[in-house]
Length: 390
Ligand code: NAD
Ligand code: MG
Picture 1 (cartoon, helix red, strand yellow):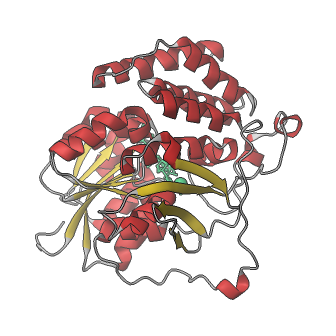
Picture 2 (cartoon, rainbow, N blue to C red):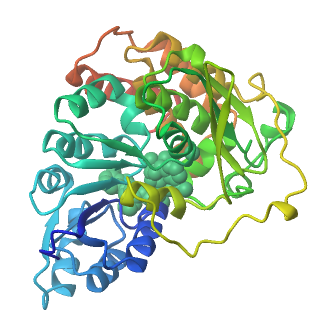
């Protein structure tokens, strides 16, 4: 907790995840610049308590209310207020005690608290790409209305954001979103049909939460990122290109009308885009490992194989058609990925579930927020039926 006006007060939603933990490492290295005011977690109460004891926030939220008593008890000798339940996320997102929300909840669950923060004028550092995939038009419209900056944390979008600094009057011809290709780059369906979650969870370049790691293996992550980019940078689908770049050194590129291309580079390390978003518009020092170009033999690029990795084709379709289709796709993907992680369906079934759900749920061209919520529910029900999940 702080009252120093020069310190940015941070609300970290999803503090126990991969992005959450790395965000706290960045904050720990800069106690003169950031304070932690809110921490939230879904189930991992042990880690939440340890984080709270170290960073002394105003408030913690444990979403799973069966763990409330344990958290309350563990923090009994502190001034930290403890809340529980899903609704509490939105309630604390509306509070005055912080300046910037780092949105690091995974999936659809991040949407409501982030929207609430936007409506209360908070700056958003956005890791939770699903927020823009589900309801990008409404999120951006609310951000504009409330003059709220949305600073991307996703490494590709941070790269594009950094390339665009100083270019406000210049038209973007296209952006090139780079993708590592994931653990199954070059593989064909006859191989993918047998892959297990242990295999799919091994990402070559990044260590991340389970859901995004599977999304990277299926290339759905890049599909979600195309839709995220559309909303963040106000682009037409035709202006967004995906290129496989297995070394993950170029984090993405922007091509301008004169043909000039700007890239942002560095070693794959999420702490860099996290720190950039927290400190924006300043760059602040870091001790992150530096890129030694002499040790990088080559940077290579290739077209993604969308015939094998059909999730990317489905996401392109959703990007082009718009309406509630990205929301429906996201819901089916979330459910299918969790079913795959519980060994309930195979790797290639993920795509079938998404495709069938996208075909089935009725299309709405210009959904209201409630219609997005309904489409999400409808898609989840349908996807669960296909997979025989109760
Ligand atoms: P993670 O699974 O490691 O962590 C997720 C966090 O969200 C945890 O703190 C968890 O407690 C919380 N959470 C989960 N379900 C919740 C629910 N229903 N309600 C409230 N809280 C819930 O995920 P992650 O890898 O840190 O990713 C977080 C977000 O950042 C995702 O949207 C992901 O796409 C995005 N992202 C992650 C990375 C990365 O390197 N991990 C990179 C770019 C973007
Ligand atoms: Mg990314």
